Image 1 (cartoon, rainbow, N blue to C red):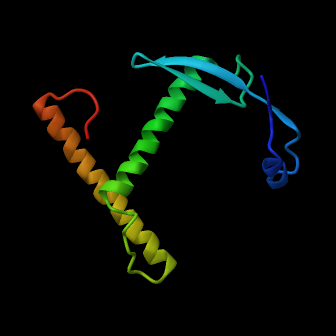
Image 2: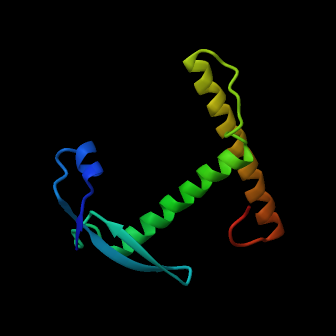
Length: 119
């Protein structure tokens, strides 16, 4: 399918052109029908099923980012460090703490024989 590009997009990316070729994929995940629109139009190189799997993995990563921001309160987090390398160290500390908590949650879920998504 062909999609028209907006003047704003063409201004931001001068080589974009007036339209872009896209491919609409319909995949079913966990009993739910999802539609994915992609510029990767070569069906042989990018099979629909694999694209759906990759999108599912990507979505799980996005949910993880959201959870980190909400649970670890990164939106209200005040970094105390003044030097870039120490700010980076603080952020790694937040990620380490998050992963340790998630690890303990998984171990507890295994112990209790809980299946499905763990929140």
